[in-house]
Amino acid sequence: MAESSESSDSSSSSPLKYVKNKMKSLGEYWDDRFAILDHYTKTFFTPDKPLPKWSDSDVEEFIASDPVNGPTLKCVREAAKFAATGSAIGAISTAGLAWKYSKSPHGAVLALGAGAIFGWTFGQEIANHWMQLYRMDTLAAQLEFLDWWKKRTEGSRDRVL
Image (cartoon, rainbow, N blue to C red):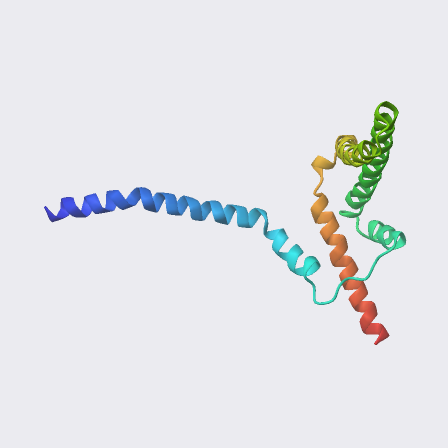
């Protein structure tokens, strides 16, 4: 009789244990997938000292020095140009059409903003497919550049002091 009560207790807690184990493994899975965000957040969003600004020549130097992440970062910068062009085209065309047909200043301003957002989105999608950014790890390339820039500026700060 004691054996049957023990087996019923273990069988009733078994689904609960199963769910807890599944939730734990799911949490570990997502923690592993987004581990880069912990480093990214601590290093660049809440740093002890903010990073100084960089110029285009600094980015070009990184692109030339890193054969793995350099080309990816170059594609990301070109994709941003696609998106900015799309944003300008979208903003001007929708605001122009709104002004032409309604002569409403507030409608033209709203169309300008909406066109800029839609144009940016379409430009980014076009660049994503044109340059095949979906095959690259763009976040890792950007993070690698920020790490490189941080090391470079910290080294120059030490030399100056």
